[in-house]
Image (tube, rainbow, N blue to C red; front, side, top):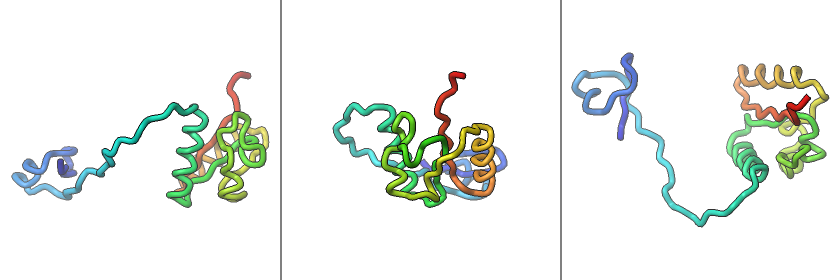
Length: 122
């Protein structure tokens, strides 16, 4: 389906043509090839997703306590520091508010931070 963006929101192509409205864009396409599914631990799925995004986009980086050299307290960031280095996988001190602020600020500047908090049970 092709959508048209206008001041009225998204409309279908027929409505756009009829009313001569603005910009026409195609919806993103997704692969429909289905491969065999496998059970994956949540931490492995998160690790794979972060690795995929870091490989795809140089603006993506990870910061948090023990995410680099120690591979994360729960091993979610396993192997990412070795692959992407100190500039994209950053160990932070135990200052959650501090590195949350760094993540927000860098996102406002156009980077794509992934901010890992070790635990919330205190």
